[in-house]
Image (tube, rainbow, N blue to C red):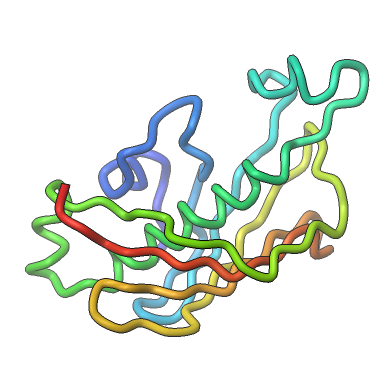
Length: 149
């Protein structure tokens, strides 16, 4: 299953400039998601990070992984639960084992690969990885909870 940005916005409450996924390439309910973001020099974050040496902030990479995990969690719910998605929100609970291995720069296609480690009730634990041209740039374990708005 693929999702374009309009379909992603039906799932996530995030909007510009904080929607950090452009497309979902593949998703397998309860298992994994493969999504990406095209990093552009026109993004506001590059005005200050860093002038003359633009680097996409690590915190934005981790947030993008978390958003991909949120899409995966929602798409893993039952059809009945998905129908009520407008009344739910994903809260980011923790980041563990986070490592930044290579910088991300304007012009890069940042690919998110997020796998479910554990799911119990409304709690999800994910292993997130971010790649540029097949090279690992960032990895982290993320914990999230789906709650009523």
